[in-house]
Image (cartoon, rainbow, N blue to C red; front, top):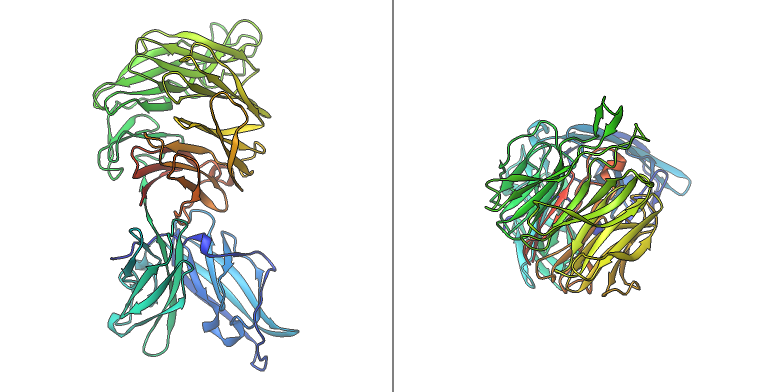
Length: 566
């Protein structure tokens, strides 16, 4: 099996190195002369890299006290023993440089300084003529073993591949590794859903050596690109190959699992897509507003909301027609405020004819801005209100149903309190169910409601995943993580589920359930980078869609992550 180059799994690395942190080891004879070296280290953009400090002198082996006296600006350092450090970029780096300094001491004796210039390149075509191992990934199909041709994807210049020798530098934690010629055979000891990794060493006949690593998993992760550069799109897949993406000006369709996309609606000059849903492979709905921030009207001298509209397809996305969901509205008492950006902010149909839209509505009686749920029983031709509750200048409202009778509405009421509504009569009546400082995400299945409750509105705050049964608001805490779980999704059967979020420094975090949400295990996706500013990277996970028991798609910034459950 040929390994696939991807990012290194952070779970295998335990110690984060910040400024003035220390690597410590065993005693080291300090009779050698101090050294001061400046090293150029080449690496590929958006990949982590291993650096063996000991090759630059025994002063930098694990026996010395190694201290980072000047940390890198764009990434983090991890110590993984034996004088080896790993540099992990914390942001998307297309082509850049970074720099850090390590000093070595033995007791009070100064042994030397290493200044590492990281040369981050888009491709190996700009590398110097050298041999540089690149990261590998291998997938285990259940219990067993896999052979990894670790040199196949490495950058080899100025060396004959046949002259290189491969050895194991660090054994994996959940299996064992042996060398077979120039390949490595990994044998699993236990299921490695949480991931495993190993470090290998490549040597030339003249004694030069470089380190590489392999990440092992029983899932397959493939990183794809969205069809445009829009960062607020929505994604839904109706089967393992067919999916739809709402871009900046149009809806796109893929029929090959996200590899290629084609536009299936006309391009709109000004539009904001809000939500998209398919109730079966043929019938789908996309909610949109014709403007992002509202329109100024001279007649009333106020800002006007643009209203909400729905595109609808009944032929698998080949053709789309639109329905009017709401007409424009404005608040004459507040000329500087638009009611959210539209009337509706989410759409959910329980059948071809019965559907719901949740969002913000303006009225001429206080409070002017009210969270509202409207419904249709004729496929979207006509709409009527079934719930209206007032909070001043609210955010959005998401509606989701577990079945035709039981549904939930996530009301973002104000900056310090969110409310979850429940209906048990098909959406005729709604009542408060849960109130929390922040309800970050919800998903409904036949096994109940799953909700992420965060401790604060800050994106990087911890959160807990709860399961609620029926109308009992006393939920069971299933897990607690150090970041906000911003998305939860399940397969059509409810057996396969994913829950995750993102942080500026740690990238994508993901947990998986294969027993209908009863238990959750960290899913190994390696380190997948966010994009944009720090706050934008914390909101990069836009959606999760799971069309089958085997495949899930995650919209993460401008990336689509295809995740295969093995």
